[in-house]
Length: 309
Image 1 (tube, helix red, strand yellow):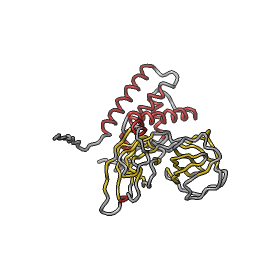
Image 2 (cartoon, one colour):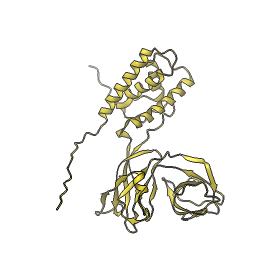
Image 3 (cartoon, one colour):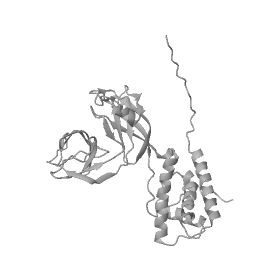
Image 4 (spheres, one colour):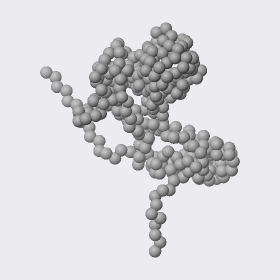
């Protein structure tokens, strides 16, 4: 009697995934350009999936130690959005650890807060969903050497720097909250998982725009707060021909169908009826995978009762 394989390791590397998609279009993968255009379409497909909604396998948990009077904190560059968040007291150590809810607010609400530098336990957070890009077109230089602990940063010209934000000096990302003349003040070093370091006079300074959070009030001294979050991250790029994709096995049919649909609209000589069929198949395969990729836990709703005297 035949035996089973006793393996559950099936996956498609990039080359096989693209070949399968070409075959569904009635074509063959023949040239280096075919591979390049398919890789481009695949990267666009993963971005489309991020826009379609939540993908459970892209949820990561992270934490940011909060610093007294610091309101601005960088998130990992590949962050799309935050799903849930809390403020943890006592830095998450010992039996006195407590997670306290922190409310998400909009940019317009944050902008109306009259005193953004007020101290206390943070109760509100504005999530600034920036691109993560470095703007090399807006540059200046350090106007003096910088130690690893300096909290004021003199630059040759601050004329084109945002009044609040992040700069990158060498490989270090630095947050600043005030500019006076050509001096950045209230600086917080080693943001976005970089390390505070010394920098030489005339070192290049560029603007960087990582996704970030602004909390209010700013943490008070002795609070020992940690910002705990669950984030939705970007899917990894397609990579080279030997890489598997950054998706669980249950989404492989949807990815093949989606790539085939995208390629059918670019390749010459594909029958319009086949293009329509590939598009329909893609939507069906994605819906099957998305319906399976959901929370299985029960949801309980508790009404809030308000009593008036």
